[in-house]
Image (cartoon, rainbow, N blue to C red; front, side, top):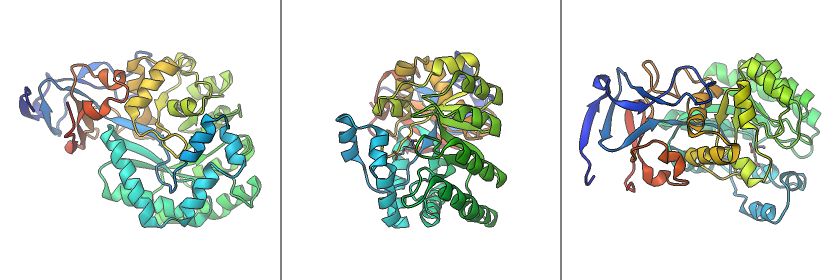
Length: 405
Ligand SMILES: N=CN[C@@H](CCC(=O)O)C(=O)O
């Protein structure tokens, strides 16, 4: 507190307060939807500190935070030269995590999940997409989705929940058998639970990849998911060019993640279909993949969003670090990275009416950072722990940083 003057500020009277705020609509302008603006918010009440630079809150549009068992041993294997798919085909990777997640109790998963969400929140994310996908059988997929539902009901952080039962082909099944199982057993059960209000899933995901689910199986699963009211938001064109982007555009997907191997035609199709590209700089970095073509996507008018891809392969909780990597490795400007990690990420989750910018009628989520310029959040790589003073959700301070400088 030293050297700072504390103000309790009723934001309804704060028309002169200049904040980093965005527009209701996502996206396209290359200078980003960021920019400085004036906040006129009727219902927010917050504590602001003189000399703190305020900013919007971050949205993480692609994470896998519910699972058991770490994979640090595989990180060492990858550092020694093993590829992601070599480890997967040898029974490790997702299969390793599936084995541990099947054995874990719901309470064990919840405890670990709660801690991970807490770390995401302290790094400035107030809305997070949470995928299942380490069960692959109905029982464990439902266990994971129940854990997500429990967190949604009990925690301040916002959650968009994604059924990802087609994250890998389970051992002992062919891709066609797994596809049939999902369509005939998993999705009808999800529909029933959604109707009864027990589990409210928002999105459907498939890992559309060579050696996992091909384009035809992906199409069947995504169409069946769409039929029960789920938004399509899937892994595509990550390790091999699959024409996933073309498929997603055709099916009316809300978003496609990864896209390191997307085709030029796929980029154009996504722009036309207003299908968001969720780029994941940590994955390209950890797996030493080629970088997604963010510049080309932005030039073609694709809605570019960012996600941490937090999972046992890419262990990063921090959207500020993700934004930094997007700027350095994908050549995005800081304004573009901010738009991609706020309003566009909210769009990718179908939540841009309520999240992603500070506007009348939206939920009042924001960060107060200790800096004269919001860009420090990106510039100071890994510096968010000291920079973020407050995380505010729905106008209420839910995290006050006692380690701030
Ligand atoms: N690529 C597939 N799925 C995850 C990784 C899952 C894992 O390796 O456990 C991703 O989004 O990066």
